[in-house]
Image 1: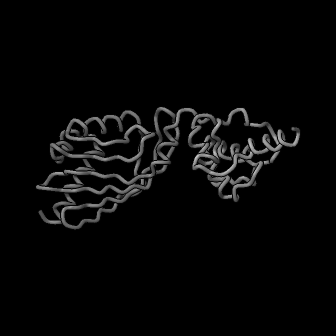
Image 2: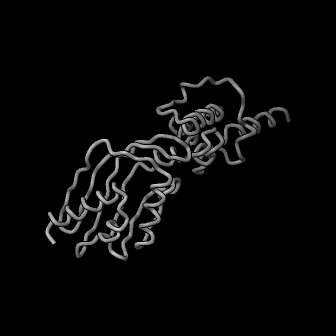
Image 3: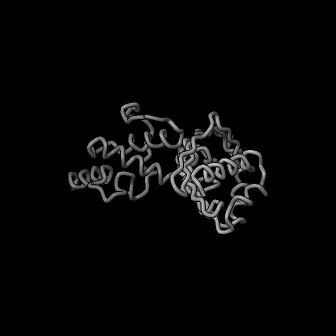
Length: 223
């Protein structure tokens, strides 16, 4: 098929999605279609195969996401590949949290049918919008990883673990973009009891834990 025909097939597919025309979608999709949605912390992530998988992902999208497209997508094609570039805004219904997603669909066409769809999307924005508990303890692994990154960015200083942890809590738990450690005071309630034995800055096999190092020096001094 020609490039123009492939583009039109994809346009028809998107039109069917927009109107909720399930039969129209299935008619345009190969029986062994694969639809790959990246990420792991939001409803649509995963590999969806065949007409059954296509029906499931479209049903989940309808039930769980409100989405609008503020501007028409752009279609770029070469051979049997069609790239669709666009932006979507909306919210996750379960959390009522908004998101903005700049996305690209890479679509393969064979014999007039869509055989593969691979999405490139803002997985972080969608995962954060899907998070049901925005409290600072909702994402401990991510908080640890971010605190570790902040510690490394500052040159791995001793004695600042608690400030890094609080900064990571605010940045990840409360969605504060662009927060730096300097934005937080050094004094305040300690999180030492909340930090596991392997604290944030030790995730990558880093050097000495400032907390245990201080304790060790104190024991040595008093011996």
